[in-house]
Length: 221
Ligand SMILES: [Zn+2]
Image: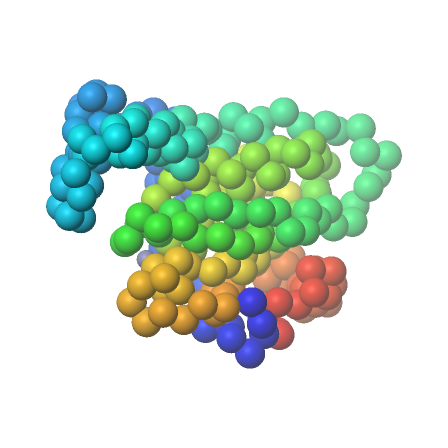
């Protein structure tokens, strides 16, 4: 991931999808059984041109389905609930709280292949602060779903804004999309950078610069 290779930058602007529209912590209606999911994997193996009954592939449908439980664990996590527990005894702390370089493992909703990168998350507390691990868990809850990076960025920022109601929220994500590196145009080493700035991070250039400097200014703003 180099600065020269940044392909897209998104700064502020209205979100297309708010946290309120994000999938909540419930499996969709009519969820198929595990056996049906395994049968679907067998079909894909056959379609790829291999034999799901050969020894090396016998347990593969089971393993793939288990992997999917990990890849898509976010569907059963509720970001609002994660952020609910806050602390008010901050002795007047009123500066930026930032978490830098949170690893992102997400999955492109168009090709179902990994999106790997990092998220930087910051907020300017109004009165309440949240445990820092909770910010990382919110990133995970939205990442472990079928996503596009723009929506992922907005959902994280919007959820923090809605629940903590801070003076501002900033989220920057830099990620490599395997649908671009291992298929299609085959361009490895290209990172996509997206950002969503709310409240004071959007309106106060000094604060925004402070945050971007803190995270190493990935987009060269
Ligand atoms: Zn894709």
